Length: 126
Length: 387
Ligand SMILES: Cc1ncc(COP(=O)(O)O)c(C=O)c1O
Image (cartoon, rainbow over all chains, first blue to last red; front, side):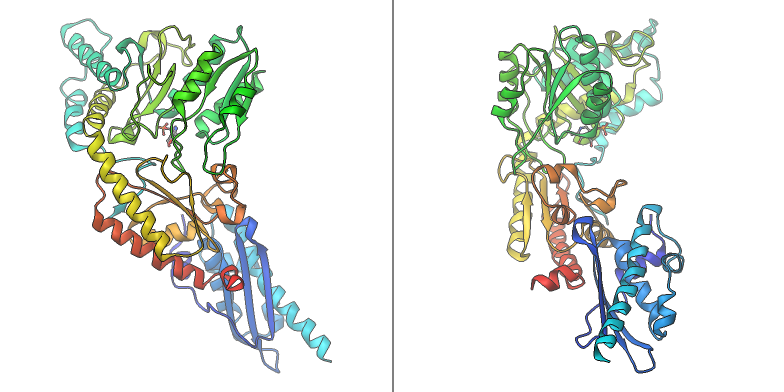
C-alpha cells in the first residue's frame, strides 16, 4: 500500500521533536479528523531555515510527509520553503495512495503556517 | 515468524480439516446432485456434514443451508426473509453495530420501501431491551441482532432478544459469525429462528457458511437457478468447503471449554498488562460479557494505523478502527456508536487471540505495544499538550 520511502520515513522519521526557542511554529489539522501536525522553525538573519522539527499525530503517511517536508525545507530560505507544494512532497516519497494525498496537503500547510507565524512575530518586533 | 493476533478477521484452517477436505477436490470431485453411485456417496457426505452443523447448535439437519459465507447468510436472512414476508409487514429492527452485511442489506431494503430501526447501544456496546420493546410496531416482521460484535467483542443478550421477539410474534435472526466456537449456541433454548455463521472464523475453510432457518420460517432465495439446498440457494455445492465446515464446527464444540479457557486467560493477561503499563487508554466493550479472544483498546493521543503498521514491522498482525485504514476516512461506526469521540476512536487497536497463540507470543505482543505506543506518543503534539 505504501512505497518503501513512505515506510522508511514513517519508521525512521527525520527531525522529530520541538525547538524551544523557535522563530516560527505552525500547527495544522484537527484531532477529530485524525491528523495534527506541528512544525517548528529556526531561521537566521539571512532568512535561511537552519533547523526544523516536527510532531505529528496521524497515520503513517501523515508522519512520513511531515518528515519529508522537514528534510526538503532545511537549509532553504523562507521564500524557497514557501514554494514547497504537497505534490512535491508526495513525489519525493514516491507517491501516496489517493486517499492519503490530504496528508501531503497538511505538510505543505504546516510549513506555511510556521513561516506565517515567523513573519507575524517579525512584524510585531519591528 | 508471524505473530497472528487477528483471529476475528480470519483463522488458520486446521490441517486435519484440510486433510478431510482434500479428497473432495481430487478423487471425489463428483457433483452431489447427480444420481450415479459416486455422486450419491458424495451427497451422503454432504448430508452428514449438514448433520454435524445441526447437532452443534441443536438444530435439525433440514434447517441447515450451506452458503458462501457469513455475508451471503446475512443477505439471505435479511432480504430473503423480508421479501417472503412483505405482506405481513415492512418493518425490521436491527442494531447500529451490526456487520455491514446486515446494515447494507437493511439499507437496500429501505430503498425498496421497507422501514428499518437501528437500535442504539450503550457505552459497552449492549442494545437496550426497553428500546427494543419500544421499537416494536404492528408491522414489525424481523429482529436481527448479532450474537457478538466483531470489533469490540460485546456479547448481546440473545436469548432475551429472542424471547421478546417471540412474545410479539416476530422472527429473530442473529449473526453468530464471531460467536461460533466462543459462545455456546442452542437455537431452541435461545429463541433463534435464523442464524448466520462462516467457516473461516472457527479454523474451517473460507468461502463457506451456513444459514440456519428454523422450520416454519419463510425465506425467499436470493440467487435463482437449480434446486440445490432445497431451493433456497442455487448453484453446485462447494463440497470441500461444506465437508470442512462440518468437521470444523464439530471440532470447535469438542474443544470448546479447553479453548475458551486458555484464550480467555491469555486475553485477560494482555488486558491487565496493557492497563498496568500504559496510561491514558480505554478498554472498549464490556469487561466480562465479551468474546474470549477480543481485546480492543483506544490509545489516546496517537492514531491506530500507525500503531498497526509499526506492529506489522515487528511481525505482529492486529487490526484498527482508525479512519486512516478505511476508504471513507471515517473511524469505525461501532466505536462511534459506543460514544467514543472521533479523536479517540482513531487510536484503537483490536487484538483477537486464537487457539494457536502462546503465552510467549502474548508477552512479545505486550512489549511491542508498549514500545510502539511510547514511540508514537513521543512524536505526538497532542500528547505534548496534555503533559
Ligand atoms: C459479525 C460478522 N458478520 C459477517 C461477517 C462476514 O463473513 P464472511 O467474510 O465470511 O462473508 C463477518 C466477517 O468479518 C463478521 O465478523
